[in-house]
Image: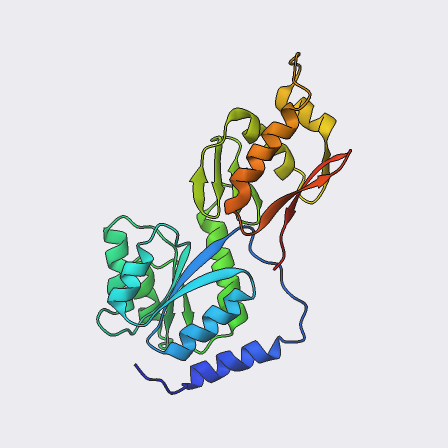
Length: 255
């Protein structure tokens, strides 16, 4: 593996520098983890640092077998995969993933601009390709586009930071781990996530969670809110703030 910067890496570095004075772009809606596989360590580092500006975490790999193993992890949302790799080239890595039934989105990188190389990559199962040298902004845009294409049926999900709630399937994920919430806490979290950053009054929560039930204990809301807060302790990006005498607000933590 070469440790010397290539012309591609130099151009990537300039792309990063050129955007220093630009307005910050919005982060991804929800947590995203990307595996970056390239035999140039500086390329992997540049991509990782750039995506980190958008709250995207990355795992860097420098050869085909290591990249294949990392791409198999269930928490991977996309793979940035160089074509020319030691041990196993990018085409073989992609083919093996598809052979195993793994449909993780793959963005193929190649220094070759010829159409046959691009076609070969797509036929191997890649979702998109990017020809070196490229701008980091384009890499970022293509990853977002892949994610939108690969998640067409999840528009009904509520996402705040690293908390995802699916009201149709009655499922919740916190920090990329699925958790089971009792009916009351699920209804409470739904109400809060439908109004992120806004105060949800106690009266509104009573209506959403208990509907027309009678004989509700005076401290029932506080008890269930305490339990919900305990479940959200695993989140690094979301917290519930008490607006004393008014209600509660679900907030995304900006680090």
